[in-house]
Amino acid sequence: MTQVCYRSVMRLLISCALLAVGCSSSVENAAPLPPIDDSCAGTCPQSKIKHVVVIIQENHTFDDHFGRYCTAPAGQLPSCSEGPSCCEAAPATDAAGHTPITLDDDAQALHDPDHTAACETKEMNGGAMDRYATESCGSPQNVAVGDAKTMQTFWDFAKSGAIADRYFQPEIGQSSANDMYFARATHVFDDNAFGPKDARGVTCGFGSSAQAEYADKTIGDLLADKAMPWSFYAEGYGTMRDALAAGHCAARDPLCPGNINFYPCIFDPSDVPFQYYPRWRDNADTMKDLGDFTGALEAGGLPAVSFIKGLGFHTEHGGIRTTITDGATFVKDLYDAVMHSRYRDNTLFLVTYDEGGGLWDHVKPPATNPIDNKPYGTRVPMIAAGPFARKNHISHVTMEHSSIVKFLEWNFLGQTGQLGTRDTNVANLGSLIDPVAAGAAVPED
View 1 (cartoon, rainbow, N blue to C red):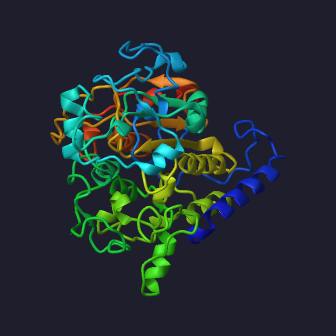
View 2 (cartoon, rainbow, N blue to C red):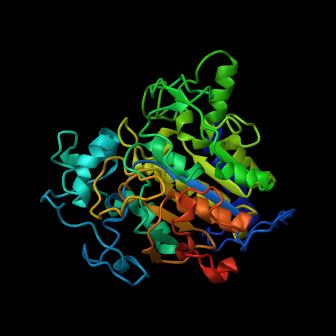
């Protein structure tokens, strides 16, 4: 199924599910469809969570999404955990005295900050977080905080689920370097230094001309070796696959506001960390189009672990006429599809962002992780939703992308630290998960 059909298929799937449950006006209150036989054939999960869906958005900080949702004074370090009064608001100015602009769709569409490691290191200024507006590579537009109108979808998720206010991008720098932590839980390369060698579409974009591949074990290897099904669903992948089979690169998605046959309007394999590993590169068992995800929800066959990446204009990446509203709608449509499916009662839904995109955040990152000696970047949003998420909850536990890997190891493989990377020393996701609903206390460490 090609990307062109994504929105119509998603809305048809949700509409059919609504008819099946009597058109309830609330996703959370809708009765589930008859369950699919979801018994475990081998090792059973440690909890009632049988499916995990991870949506990877792009290039936003905690402050720019939740800085006006949270109401505790900046620097207060609240210890409570229920509601917006238990997380710090973005300060009225950054540490250098610059007042944040309002990050609405218009501001988002026109500005893509420099988010290379070199620039962000200068802007962070050793944790002072005070040079985003003044560095030569920075801009006053980098100091930006979203308003209620623009961020309401994400604030609604926060009220009905859980967010983390100490979730950091694993290393300073661009998307691909941080994406690798979803697979390896460690540093692999800097910034967007390489595209995945020989992967479909690698020569169709305008990224690095250098290509690389790696042989280290990933969380995909660990899951597959234990016969635990997983997939990476990428919007536009089917269109790119079919176009290349016909001898050309994919044309822009017709819904993309940018009038270009490049990112953010076509599939980019460098957004998929598993494409850098020959075992998984364009492997039809795991590398799939987003349409396959909606099909699995409808017909059955949803794997235990699903990673999802939208086309660039659905990921909230700054500039090139992309908007936060398009990204929020993309996330909400996927959530509604899961919650109206037969999988709603046993699925944990996670949304996070690969990196902060060069936007300002006021909280100093933690110390360098000793596993790979790479310094942490800014906070990024992390949302847990669905029946297993704590409600109206703020987690203050320090986490990062490797925490997702650690949780997958714990829940589906019964033992953490199997990669021997940051999965050995980062916190688990227990502070986001309701132990009663999950039927087990997920560790927080």
